[in-house]
Amino acid sequence: MPYGLLTDTMLSVVAKYVRDRVVYDLGAGDMQHARQIKALGAENVIGVDTEKMDHGRLPPGVQFVHKRLQDVPMPTPRPDVLFISWPVNRPMPGLVDWTWRAGKVIYLGSNLDGDCCGTPALFEAFLQRDLLEHVTHRRNTLLVLGTPRETLRTPTIEELAGMDYSRVYTWP
Image (tube, rainbow, N blue to C red; front, side):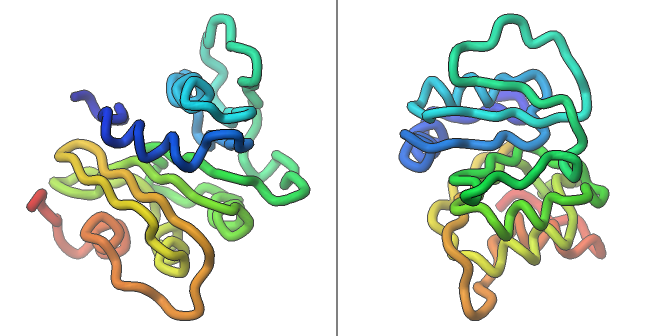
């Protein structure tokens, strides 16, 4: 399984949270995940990325926004679901703000075995939300985060590795 792909188990989990929802795919790249999310029953999917790729014809209900995240107006009401796949490991202005405002956040990436997907600030923000789902795979881990919490929760190994660059965390 290549990096960034969703397993059948992950697709089943994602479907529970995107059905009939508006989903923002942040860092949408080639729009592959946006198409999958729409096929899983999302009402609309808005893919945001700074790179303009040839996406071909997008299905109805899937839109591409060619902008930096900080230049995309925050929707009102708040975004139902954010999907973040393999985020860069340098600050991405606006990303943490979007995670604060979203109803749910779905993260796909890996911080194990030398990979690094996201920043310490992103994972610190994740710890302030309920962990609804955690599906592991050697190349991709899926986290589904719910409502904000009063206290920090215990991090998953992915989150711990994303916050602590002092060592390489390995696949269990």
